[in-house]
Length: 243
Ligand code: MF3
Ligand code: CO
Image (cartoon, rainbow, N blue to C red):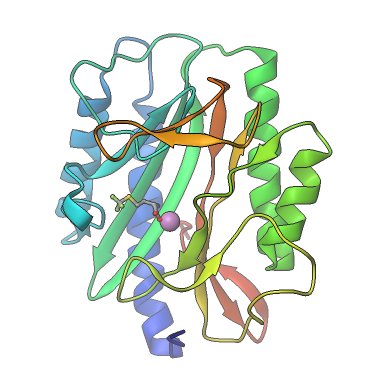
């Protein structure tokens, strides 16, 4: 069931989105060689709680941390750990949600750790660009797929974007692949998280024994960018942004 949001609810969601975006930026600034992903998670939790919000992911289906921190070939759901120390050249996806006054914001960004290869930078640029194309057209499937496949990358199929609101995951699901004109018709009041997960190599992924960490099957690099977007009469509006 798709839950439409009133304009009053959207203004609360904008606050949740803003806290999520601020947390993502603070965490992104902490991405540096020698820092552990556990330390970054701590920054996220401390900031979100300082705003009177709670980290959306902490305890969600038993997830043990506030952020998902996915390095290099890890696609999504990397669990922060004191033993994962960032190195120069890593690409680091941070996925962060904040729950505030009854609503969630959800966003992700892949940050370079120090200087990264040109190849890795091109993957980040293309994935970021595909997110904004998806938002512009608010029909992410085809927009994302056509853009990244033309560059030789591939779209992860097993995980998709989603509706977001009082629950972190609501209907509809928002795939990053598909045929133009198919799927759920977007309506004003819908709020969706658009989140392309793009691999440099083949699309296949695999979940490790911890039940969360999702890696590329072929070991290739993967990037992930996400925004929470409201569909309005005036077009798509980003909720996960600062003023
Ligand atoms: N942004 C991710 C998602 O929308 C994060 C979920 S991690 C979880 O699926 F721990 F909350 F599941
Ligand atoms: Co999401």
